[in-house]
Image 1 (cartoon, rainbow, N blue to C red):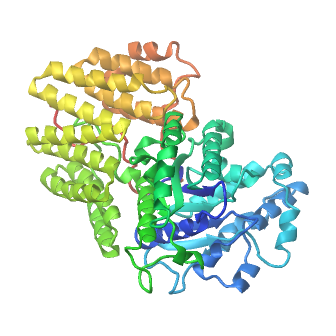
Image 2 (image 1 turned 180 degrees about the vertical axis):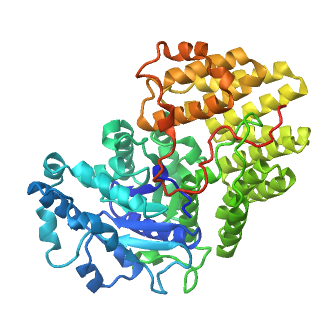
Image 3 (image 1 turned 60 degrees about the vertical axis):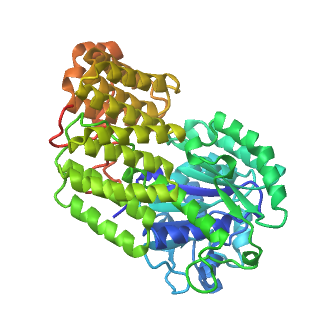
Length: 583
């Protein structure tokens, strides 16, 4: 059972300069995603000029000298196109057979799975074959972009997450690995000016890259990670460096290079300390042996792993829905039992963060089954874990889920208190969709009390959020949907105008991903609030019906997705609750 979806699956580890521990960080995160969190992980060595990821997993020289990899795949593609072969080369079809499973006791994870795709067949001819391969010609003459996309598609459908170890510096490979391939990028920098300025320039290149270079995907999420920071000796110099560069970091926030919600402690959020003892060998710091699980570097790897896990599994802690506005499809008969089994498995692995995410999802399903009190107990467990782990966005979403369940269970005052707490945390970490969901749920709850003026004021605050965002931001569709649902209770005329605004946004969505999101939101709103989709609303948003009208049926999630194929993707805005009660 996959916990992720294709649009949140490929993560590149990149460093502008070498010597920052990029490959070691990737190897340790890959191991933890599998061993602690039970994911199926593929690690890809895309550092073709200096391959070495295999050394962290004990793969023998004989194996790497006889196993194909990235270079062999692209060479086979290039040669096939050059000779006008009618079919893709056999190497394209067999590339998944080249994945090397990590199974020996010393290196293998106890849970999940971990496989490695080599840079290429590392025999005596490797350097010569690499020197004869030219990326510019490959892209210009032999459909190189299609080759990369084909490889990405194959890997994505084979794993929960694909981690890519990219070449350092400003190279052709660097551009492929930071713009075309990934859904997210971990940018590692040393605490010096040259490394940080170079890393910032790469982040700007990622932000500026046109959509066509990303093949229609959203711009990659970026986490800035400062590496090799001294713990004792010269630590005062590290403190000075953080202080001197905090303004540059804040400028990056302002320019959208990275997000505040991903860096709640600013430039100090993601830090990998320098540990001299681990600099003399390629090693995964795993449990047992001589590794102290309280070693600062171990804790830093676990924090980085947790950050990626929360992003990968964001749908397990989705941006909360609006309170009780739209009825749900009946829960699947086995969904609660499956989630209970997942929670038990997470406990056995010692995966507290994964446990919290599963408990949150379980609470949602219990609510859909009208088992509110049990759902309340489960989400309260999740809240305790999120709070202890400093998972602030998830903490906010879980509080909103708790508030909704409390209101449905008849505990109105307690429910509104939980919603208000979730709203406050969402604002602190700049989670705009979560903030809008809290405002909408509070508006409906207040309207149910007869406080119509308070409810209208809360809906107006959602409008303020939208007005401060770029119209091409895909989050706007989620926020508008929450506003529409709340307005449906408070002011139906205003809700109809918002529907027109959402429909109009479908004419110029900005990106293909945004178009899918908008169409999906419209489809569910039309299904559940059909009175808002009269001819007047359509004319307000679209003018004459024609080719620009959103193709709603095409907005459904790709049927080929491996993301929990038996379970419908949870909406990021409005819960569809069976037996929901209007407030």
